[in-house]
Amino acid sequence: MPSLLAFKFSFLQWSKDSSIIAFITFALLILLPLHEGHTKMDTKSHSSPYKKPTLDELKTKLTKEQYACTQEGATEAPFKNAYWDNKEDGIYVDVATGEPLFLSLDKYDSGSGWPSFTKPIDPKHLKLVPDHKLSVERIEVKSYSGDSHLGHVFDDGPKDRGGKRYCMNSAALKFIPLKDMKKQGYGPFLFHFKDKEKWQTANLAGGCFWGMEKLLGSLKGVIETQVGYAGGALQKPTYEDVRTGKTGHAEAVQVLFDPKLITYEDLLLEFFRIHDPTTVNQQGNDKGTQYRSAIFYENDEQKQVAKKVIQRVNSSKDWKKDVVTELKSANAFWRAEEDHQKYLEKFPNGYSCHLRRPYKF
Image (cartoon, rainbow, N blue to C red):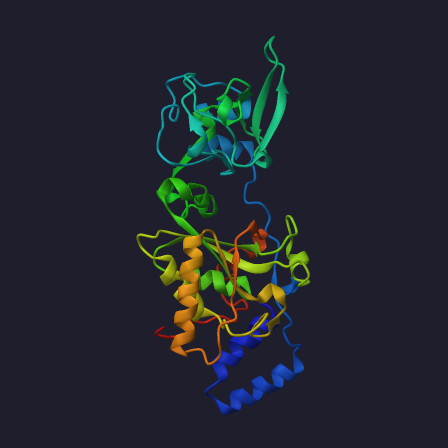
């Protein structure tokens, strides 16, 4: 259910051309509390989507070999399985639950005949347990949420890549090609392919990150976005930390884009159209250092482009006051809680104070 604030904002926009409705709106604005930054009432918890189906459901969903491997700890034949020699880029997930497990970037040919990886995407998605089935004790690898048997991990992997070999059963995995990752819900993992695909990232802050993400994410050439916290010194900040305005972090959007389709300069020009870069520590009713306008550049080239764009925006006089956007070298970008990711896709009528101006600068 959208917050009262979101209702007020939408209602005010809808009623601006009607004097009668505007009077009602004015009354509502008096009766309802004013917005003081988006608060906990605007967010909702989302449980993990990676839940193990019942065994009966799995017997229907999985092939006999997939069921035997994931639920009964069986091992498939080497060199006669789907992914041992797969060289396509993408992500490998638990075949039973869809939980993300490994990236093609960490896959290598171990000569074993099974798909092998040097590391998981995130150790939190795995469970490592002793396997006493053989006389030589091994470490079994299971998926965390689905408890699926995946394979084993050994200490004979490439030394220059950590020395581990995660030897998995293809039957325990589902492979999703790079081109399908976003539409199948694995868009955030596309950031890992930035260097290989020669993509770039921009780190931008301009008030509440919900509205910023929606508008920037709609641009042609933008591959993926994520919201988070940037510009402060606190390690692993939470929303509750940042909303105090005392951490030095700004609510920010990290934009993954293809420079062959949209340049960093054009992306910044859009950035200056969708928020007010002339207000200090404020966007609309959102006030505080966490709502400041900022560009966190990743290299000197981005810095020089940003300076050029700011000068261009100031010279245009489209904004009646000068730009106060902070220009700062990027440090860590901390991904925000899942509640905040793609917020306006989850709640289309949710609060936003951003819109695109038709400025020509």
